[in-house]
Image (cartoon, rainbow, N blue to C red; front, side, top):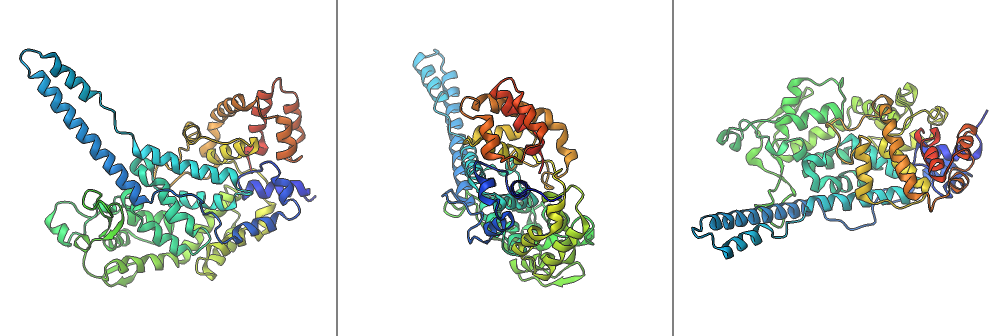
Amino acid sequence: MGRSANAEAALALSRFGLGPRRGSIEAVRSDPRGALAAEIARPLAGALDITLPTSAQAFRTVADANAERRARQIVAAKAKRAAESMVDGNEAAGNQSDAAMAADPVPDAGRRIYLDEAQARINAALNAQIGLAERLVWFWSNHFCISANKIQSMSGAYEREAIRPHILGRFVDMLQAVVRHPAMLFYLDNTASLGPNSVAGINRTRGLNENLAREILELHTLGVRGGYSQDDVIAFAKVLTGWTLIPAGDNPEHGGAFTFNRRLHEPGTQIVLAKAYDDRGVEQGQAVLNDLAAHPATATHIATKLVRHFIADEPPQPLVEKLARTFRDTGGDLKAVTEALLTAQEAWDAPATKLRRPGEWVVAMVRAAGTPADAARFTAGQATLGEPLWRPPSPRGYTDDEGTWIDGMGRRLDIASFFAERIAGRVDPQQVMDAVLGSTLSAETVQAVKRAESRQQALALLFMSPELQRR
């Protein structure tokens, strides 16, 4: 038996978007698939209409704040020592020391930048009619993840600069943007990598760092069983030496920006995946990335991850092969790959059993409630649920399988109850059921909500329902 029009619309909004909000089911119910196609057809799909600092500007801002903080600490320490050295215990000297130690602290510039970036991302998710473009941003940002624990100032700007512009473009362009982005170079330690036979490598004791090369091969392109060897990792790491960023202290105008420093670069031809790449500076690395993007193993790896993310923990192989073939045939055109996903009947026939990751669920809950979200509270909630924003536990990013997240359902109940308590005075659970979820709830969910003893309990039950947890 086929789905009702409302159920088909709800599936489109939940499986491929960020969940229904007021009026969205009604808006897309006449042609849910056409609505999804229209979203990715927009020229600026996924773009943020907001002005935020570039990653380099953010990097310099934090560097300047840290320098000022250190300077104040030095001044305060000197004042304290001077006061303690006064033989007569002069009260005025003591007061000067106290005043120096109590000087206004330098604000945490990185934290403020992080929250501004998070707020822009959250608002984009809450305001999207469907949210497919935002889902793609989230998917690719997790695929090419960095961590704010290591480079907080750049975490949001990295996503805006290296991911958002390319979600419907060519994979190779995103790959090139990601690898040369200062945040990625810093996160995976390429800024500390020196060619053993480079000028800097000969003059210093530090040497080659393989992290970036290994993760590009294993996680970003070919996959774990993609056919590369340890020798390929070493050769590729040599190719990438010299890809670094300009130190903020050395250049107050361009600090934090990408640069290729030949003094760090390993000279000579390198063999990667049985192909020789002549030493042409930065172009040597670009050539390797171009070939990795076009490799058949990359197509399969990307297709598998996309299907796992959107459809099922165990990706249906026919759908994986369809997306991989589209990737190969179009030269990694991500818009074409997304269209292949949206038009594949397998993508619509799969049961709605995929458990939302914590970040997706929180957004779906807030969209259903129709309330705004504060970045500080929102990111704290995500952290409580085990998926802190832009802070994955490793370069693998957050996993897309139910086994990782199912044990956190108790924490989800706590978050749902707390959120319901805050909004119960202004959000009617019956209106959420009628205007947002559009008769797509099961009879069991409806009955449980109607039997609730309070609006707060009714809202919490809605937020914890299978219809909000799974897609």
